[in-house]
Each structure stands twice: as C-alpha cells, then as structure tokens.
Length: 384
Image (cartoon, rainbow, N blue to C red; front, side):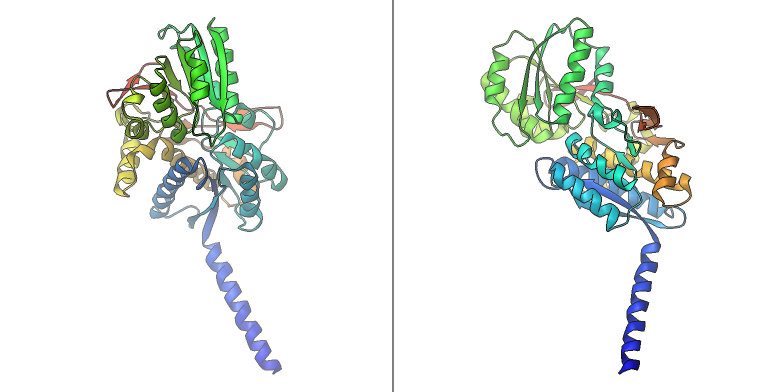
C-alpha cells in the first residue's frame, strides 16, 4: 500500500513538473479588455489586433527563445470587474505585464492593483489625463490623452470658424476629462463654451440632451462616447433636425461602422482619430499599415474594426519589445525596459516620456492625431 501511494505521488509530481515545464516555454502577457457590456465591440477589436501581433511575433521565433501567450480576460465594461481581472491575471495567472483596459474608468480602477503588485501595464486606448498624471509608475500609455487630442485640434479651430461649442459626453472619466480638456483649449482660443451634457454609458435615448443642444446658440457639438452610442446620437440628431456641426473625439468611432449603421445621418460629421487604415500612404509606417490591414482582412474581420484593433496590435508589440529589452520576463525588469525602447508603431514611433509627479512618473508616448470627415458615405481626410 505504501509503495502504491508512493507511486501515485511520483506520478502526480511528474505531471505537475511537466505542466510547469510547458508553461515555462511561453511568456505570458495579461490582456484585460471589455468583451461583454457597453464596450464589447471595441474591446473585441482590440483583442483581435493583439492576437495578430502575438501570431506575428511567434512566427518569427517569439521573444527570448519562447513563444508569447496572451492570457485574455473579460472586464465586462465594468470598473470593479476590471480591477478583479487585473488581480487574477497577476496573482493566479502569474503574468509579469499587462495590456488594458480600454476605457478610462476601467484603467483607473486597475491602477491601484498595478501599484499593489508592482506590475507594469501598457494602456492602449484610455484617454483620461488622470491616468498618467496621478503618480503611477507602472503605467505606460500609447494612446493620446484628451489633452493631446485637444492640442492637435487647436490648430484647426480657426479654419472651422468655431465661435461657440456645446459638449455631449459619456458620463465617466473619459467623457468628463475630454470636456474639461477641450473646454480649456477652446477658452484659450477665445471660443465660448456652452452646454456640457452627459449620458450614461448604457443610454439608448439621447433626445433630451440633443433637444437642449438644438435650442442653444452654439454652431458645433463635440461628442465623446463609443461607436454604438454614436450611431444612435447621429440618427436621433437627424430625426430632431439638429443641423449643427458634430465633431467626435477619442479615436474609438469606427467611421465605417458609423456609415453602415447611421447612413445619411452621419454625413458631415467629423472625427478625431489616431489611425488611417483608409489612407496607408499617409500613415507614418505605410508598409506596416498595409501588412496589418491585409492580415486583418485575411482573418475575415470587419474592416470597420481597424481603427480600434491597431491599438491591440501596437500594444502587444510594445510589450514584446520591453520584454526583449529586459532580457527576462520579470515585472521590475520589464518596467525599467519600457523607458529604453523605441517601437515603430502604426501611428508613429512609440517612445515613452515622463508624465506625472517626480519620482513616480508614468510613461506617455506622443501618437499622431488626425481629423476625418464623412461625406456621401465616404471618408475624407482633413488637415490639422
């Protein structure tokens, strides 16, 4: 009996060691994105872009002689879930680095966990200024905060002859932060700021807010929310006869999806975006853009998702570069390596500059921002 128990124990140990050895052959990267809930469409696009990057890296031999493994978790578009997912990825899945978490409120909820477990994260989408200014040295953001968007837009406000602007924004850190940063820029330019209307992330009827805006004396409305809500806004604005110029921010608009779902109601709308899949020749890295778009189409994904999915693609490539630079898949080494990498991203070079309180700086890259307009169901590029 004792020999039998000893044999079982030996077999169990052998299986455990074999499993550990298999895991050691990969380098895990945690992916914390909204795959259900209000932001599911955008989060899914980001994850699919991340998978393209992982496959590309692995096809070239991986990193440090190992394949990378994406450990993907759904934060359900909910800040509490996003924090729980981060903790699981770090403590249970033992990932040394993460990418996430799409929305600003989601990312802000994750940030204390990064501090607690001293684990770095690449922020691929979130735009709230608080993410890189509150003193979290484990944050490295490749997307533009709303202040960078506002600064880029500043150069065109005179051409657009803006006089007074209203805002309609999602009622979270992303939307409120955008209204604050763009309002500040407008006032610096001598442009009046009128109404600042908000909407819940799950709201389906924005007619009350749009009716107020229709009755104001502004000529322009700046709108910030995800694509599914934007299409509803454009349709409802058209139904109300709202004739004002509409400009969206955040780079999460998916203009092709807007055209498909909003139809003629989208004509004349303008959008600040951070990727130009329609015009590869006008991007900083045309060859890489063509490759990514081609790979995206090859997998049967909707072209409309390119303006979101590129974030996941560049995010994973940035993480991989830091791991390679670090020489080992350990959180502290990867965190230090982020400051020393330069990645040729689809939207320009990814290089991290210090942002936030001295000694606790976050990393912030400086991506390009573009302005496009939808006319007759087609996308046109404007000059910033």
